[in-house]
Image (cartoon, rainbow, N blue to C red; front, side, top):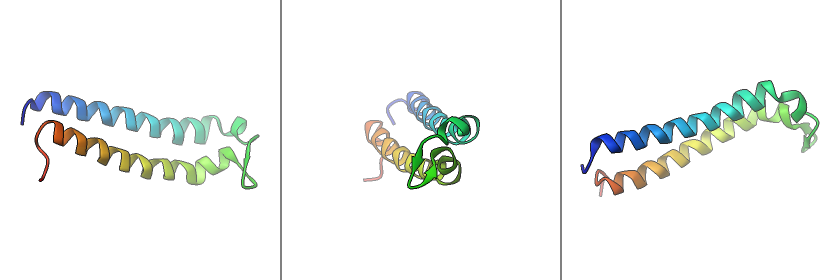
Length: 83
């Protein structure tokens, strides 16, 4: 491994950013901003309700795939990938 400290620092940055996105979608949009978002309809359902019930789960699953992609690139960059 080239620089293990920089590797883990970058990994923690990825985690902080992705978890912040998830927190914003699930907590801020799904709980705190639910009333203003309910003024928007998606498929006949209020957007705030949809985010609270399903949207945050979809975002979480998407963030898992993004994390895997980012970590694979990071592993290649620091030569710790499984070839």
